[in-house]
Length: 266
Image (cartoon, rainbow, N blue to C red; front, side, top):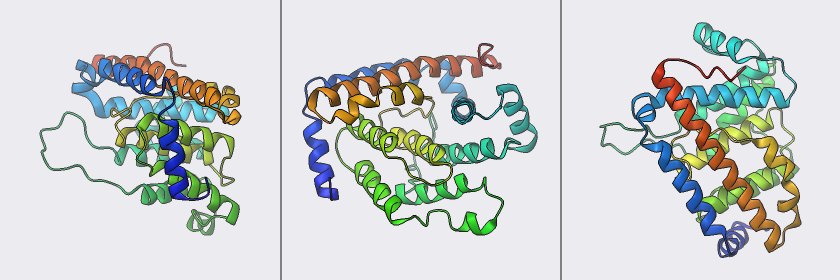
């Protein structure tokens, strides 16, 4: 996949594999169970904020940061963001992602503001680099090494493809996890970008799905095989992750409606 045209052709071919369409259908069915729930109709803004908290918690856990849900919520309520600098950078990334999403259940008939993907990605780089104390390092965010530039251009070609959303998101996740950027906070950039793209492409329009990235990482061997069987298995794994995330999203929306947080979350 050496060019945008080559990427588009490859993704279109993947879309014809047996079972891929069914993966998208399963995700759509799971989304419908949440999209018009009472909790989401009345509290979608709070639900997106709670989903951001959970994303940050998972990302910090994977990096070995000692951050709890209670501390995170208290710090965000009082200061607007977490005290831990890494958690703060992740939070900023997800808030930017949420701000790029169209509102849910609004009577405003004006078309939603669209944030260009490349502009969003540049902002996420700055957010992720805000863990660094030096302003010069923050200002240099998004100025990539030649190898990272090539990686990111491939990721953008995938994201900009017109292939079905389940194909675009699955391949984007597989490629990003297999060959990540070497910049600080790459995982925050990846997760928040994927979250925004899944919403804008309509695969998961609520913006509340919190994916289990570790389980996807554990299944990367399917993607890395590169053959038809491996890719179908990868698409199935990504679809399963979105379906599972929508079950959690329903609990999030119900908790927000009830005015409480999930007691099962540490």
